[in-house]
Every structure is written in structure tokens, then in C-alpha cells.
Image 1 (cartoon, rainbow, N blue to C red):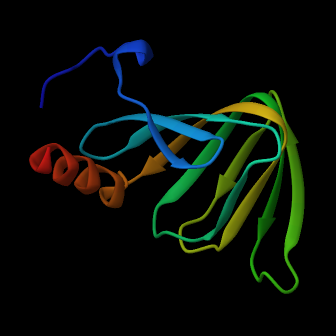
Image 2 (image 1 turned 90 degrees about the vertical axis):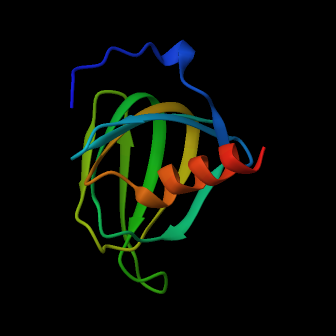
Length: 122
């Protein structure tokens, strides 16, 4: 694989949920995603096997981890970094509109395969 330079403005945006847009680039072993999250938007409970590191560039978020019935709750704001182990259920509520960079290792194949399928269909 060779080195690649991409500018975020040239990366296609997706809207996986209302008030949430994401752009991402990936290599063979890792992926970085840029999220724009509108205030009040929610990323519903989910989990994935990928380790995730979230860098809060701007805004404020409430993270819930573990069981939806009795979650561990943490708030993060601009300048904070959150490390989420693979397999840990989590949900995010956007308290103030935010920009977040998420790093995933390995890359999220559920995203990359969906993009390829959409491209092939259209």
C-alpha cells in the first residue's frame, strides 16, 4: 500500500442518523472518522469489536457505557479524549453541537462495505 493524502472537504459525507454527519478515510489497519453532531442528537446504543478513540474537537457530549439499565456516565468536552474498548456497549448524547474525530482499529468494515454496495448499486 502506498501513502495517500486526502483533504476532508473532498471526502464524501454520510448522514447515519438525524443531526449526525460523518466522513471517514481508512488504511489497512485503522480508520479515522470526522463527525459533525448537532446539539440534542443521539447516537443510539451500539457496540462493535473495534477499539475506538474519540477526540472531542469542539462541543460537549455525554457518553453512557455498559448496561442501558445502569450505565456508567461520563461527559467529555473540547480537548478531551475518550478510549472505548472493543465490545463495550455505548451511547452518546450531544449536549452542545460538536465535532469529533474517531479512530477505529481495525477499520469499520460495516461502513466501508456499505459504501461499496451503495456505489455499486447507483
